Length: 117
Image 1 (cartoon, rainbow, N blue to C red):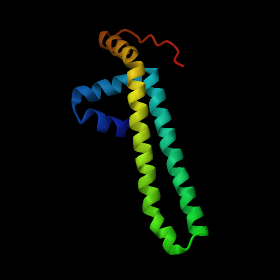
Image 2 (spheres, one colour; image 1 turned 30 degrees about the vertical axis):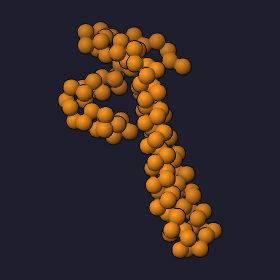
Image 3 (cartoon, rainbow, N blue to C red; image 1 turned 90 degrees about the vertical axis):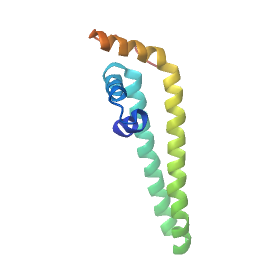
Image 4 (cartoon, helix red, strand yellow; image 1 turned 45 degrees about the horizontal axis):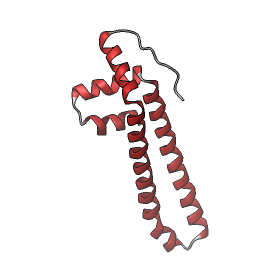
């Protein structure tokens, strides 16, 4: 999710890509958030697979085939919406802290990262 998020968030702007990469090194909340997003996507698609297997074994074949796109696009919409919502909330919550880490990175000082909750 690090690379996918970077692609969508920076739009291939070299300055923004450098900032994104610095956040990974200097901002623990950023790393935690990306890891949680990655776990959520993995679990979401695991649930979709389970739902498809259950549908394949319990529903008539045409019904299982008919609901497959609903499962796929429904899970995609749920995961995208959740990711956008969570990312925005974390960005607002830790904006000052991440700015502090980035300014420390610009000066070459070692990051001082307080524990996060």
